[in-house]
Amino acid sequence: MDIVINISVFAFGAILGSFFNVVIFRLPRKYSITHGTSFCPHCKHRIMPLELVPILSYLFLKGKCAHCHAPISIRYPIIEFITGLSFLFSYLRFGLSYASIIAMILASLCIIIAMIDIDTMEIFDRFHLMIFALALVHVLFISQLDIVSHLIGFFIISIPLYVIAVITNGIGGGDIKLMAVSGFLLGYQATLVAFFFGAVFGGMVAVYLLLTKQTQMKSLMAFGPYLCIGIYIAYLYGMDIFTWYMSLLT
View 1: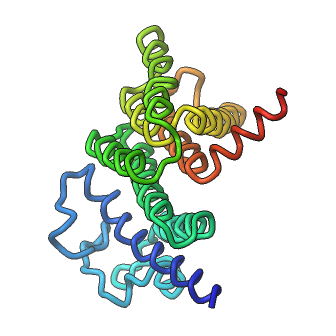
View 2: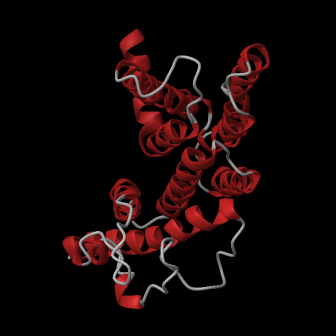
C-alpha cells in the first residue's frame, strides 16, 4: 500500500511539473498560462495530449518533436522528475499532513523561481508574495516556533544580504526578498541552515564554472536556484540540522 501511495504522490508531482514547465516558459515572455495549448517552440505545432505525459512522452518521442523532429530540451522531463521527487520527499518527511502540503507548495514555488531565475536573472515579486502567504498559514496554524523566531528569520539573512548588495551591487533584490519571506516561513534557525546550503551549493557551482573557464570572475550568476535548494531542505530538515549542529558546540 505504501508503494502505491508513494508512486501516486510522485506521479501527481510529475504531472504538476509538466504544468510548471509551461509557467517557466510562458511567464517571462508574458504569455498567458491559463489560455492556449502547449506548442513546440520550433515549429509551433500543437502538442497533443499523448505527447504531454510527464517523463514518459519524452522517452517515447526520443527527445524530439513528433512533428518537426527538433530536439526537446532535456530540462522538461528533469523538471517533471524533480517535482515528483520533491513531492515524494515532502510526503515521506511529513506524511499526510498540512505540513506536507506546505512543503509541496514550497517546492513548487522554488522550482519555478529557480528556473525562471536561471533564464532571466530575475525573481518576480508575485512569488515572494506567494511564499509570504504560505508563511502566514504556516506560522498561524502549523509552526511550533514562537512568532519572534519567525520575525528574526525574516531579517537574519535578508538584512546582511541587503548591506552586501548596497556595498558591492553583487546581490539582486529578488534574492534578498526571497530570503526575507522564506526566513519568515522557516524561523531563524532553519533560515541559517537554508542560507548555508544555498551558499555552499552556489559556491561549488561558481568554482566549477571558473575552473572550467565557463565564466569569468566578474560574471553574474543566478543565486536564487541555490537559495531555493537550501530553503526546501531547511523546511524539511532545518530544525533537525540546526539542533544537531548546536549539540556539537556544547
